[in-house]
Length: 638
Image (cartoon, rainbow, N blue to C red; front, top):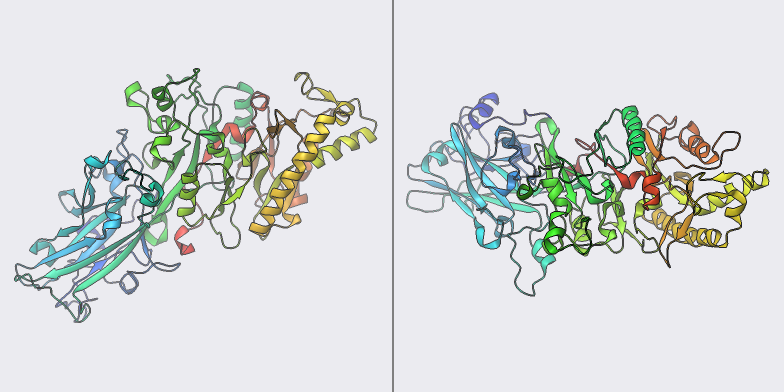
């Protein structure tokens, strides 16, 4: 990752041809090289990675935010010194690498200011609990001077400062600061105290994600000084915390994850990952092995995301952020509250020092976050699993995609997604007709060489029915599906079509799914040409508890142009599985313009029967992450 965004104060100023902060003109009168008076706070308003006092693009609209101007900073939730503590959870700069995770703020020097004068930087109270601002000085440790201070692991261990008074020398020479956020907008913090009976969500949203900065200078007599450029004696700037961006099925993923529980599953994933050039190392199923975790549903217990701000020349600088599902799966009956916490996914992502278990993901450029209320840690519902929270790829009005999720997820999680603004408001679907209740059971997204750039895969009970009817009409009624997979699944084509349960469940599921398709068309502008149907029958485990009966191929994993799809185990007709062949024809050829070149996807079939019997498929059992995103979120103006 590029690390040349800014240099320490003296070096960076010299590189720009500036000998002292504020030594060439803007904001203060006089010509270049002749600053007489200057009241100036500078942020990277033009998004080139440098807070430059001599760039009008950083000065003229520094207190605004839209698609073309406005400075930002990130929630610094990785662990650059690998001590098991997120960098924003302490009040130090953790390493040289951590230095680059701070966006810069500069106060220009007033070269000829009267001795005894002092500058004052202030921030607004609404932002103070959620940010930390450090003073950077050459040859000295970074000093926390504004925002929240202390351990901040509870309300009583956190205080905050709203102003910092510069010394005379700092007022004369200028100062560089660095800013980080402790949380994303709408995210809970342990130090956010909510009065009894108070509104938790209102407290989280009390911070709108912006920091309002001001700078003023007082003379030796404490009188507020003014200039022609600042007749009220104050210069103002504004910054926005970067959002958390969900990484969906499409993107530049470089890592794939899964449990090692099923060797044939790992074998199939390995082939797909190698074809895509993506790193893949399954984790152990034992919680006591380093990096081990007993949950096989890798998509479900964490979600992958990214956050960034402009680096030099607009190149993104940021980090992966893994968000945890609130509830885990303790391997014991009636787990205690302590056991629920021990097996909550955040303890895998961040590590559990009490049990000598290292972080699963937390480290340099890899952060961790929870987007649910603290009291919900260890508890939840299947709709709070991340197979039920996905990202519709970019379309008109949503250049970074739009989050889609089921209708019964925790309200605070849905509110968090919406509060990020750039990928919301979310599309909400009723998934309560399913046993697992996840959107990935019937929708998936694949790249296409079309104006839209992608197409929607949809599980189709009616297509499955018609394919079976075609086989029967061809005299293949005795062909067997799911050979050797047990009496519930191993059936001839004739037996399938004569089963009143399977055909009834297919009709019921068709109605539900096509209703969701209509919603997608309304919300995204999709047309029939943007949709590819995948043959899928559903069975009902109980009333309104449906799961895929045949292997749910739509529940797949995309790795760039490589599709990792569940092997369908359909009937063999002349040694050809017609379900496999359908997938190869629809997804693996130029027929539907899929893939970045429109010539089709690289299709790999993975034996996921172990997962299918447990009510999931390839997407549920895998996950992926990316080192960056292609679209610059700040260009959305949101």
